Image (cartoon, rainbow, N blue to C red; front, side, top):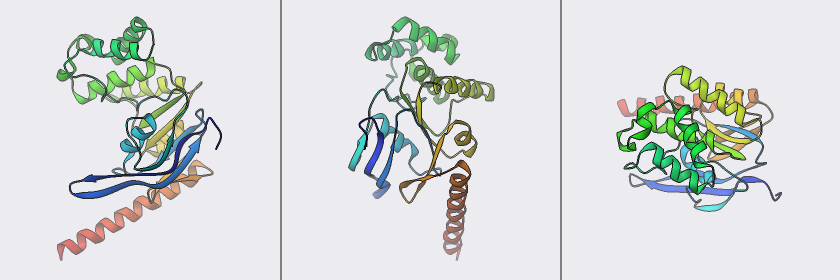
Length: 236
């Protein structure tokens, strides 16, 4: 493995939920250059957020290693680091200081990009989930990264605002890499340069988007078939 490669090496992630053990990754491997643009197609409910948090440093694997080099963003739109009793602007100022980024510039950028208006100066406990997402996404765009981590979708709110977020991300990716977990083939094809599918709790790389999409759709069809069988047995 090269010194600058990032990603997952023999990585396992499991946790207990509702008295059941859930395995998200099982000795999974995916190593890539920080400037690569990797899109992983993953079905809804497969653990995209957990995996994104692992690469961003918000979680630890149960076994194996997660390699992190350079400036890796937290997941775009992530608001878990915000304090709900503080205003949006105060949260942004504190995080800008921690990131050693120019506080006034970052705050002005976030205020304009998020389009929160007067709500930017109100406590986060008054925010909707969409407003928190917009604040978090704007902050991610304001603080430079070598690799952007994206979980699920890009932006929230109206179609026009989502389009604005996609354009902003494209501009950032001119000089940065990306690790994007999504269930949307449209977004994967638009932003990705290399493609993988989360299959059997591991990352499977494909030579092209078409090959990855085909494998992903096969997995979804198989899951739908199994679900129908389970529902059929339950109804008997």
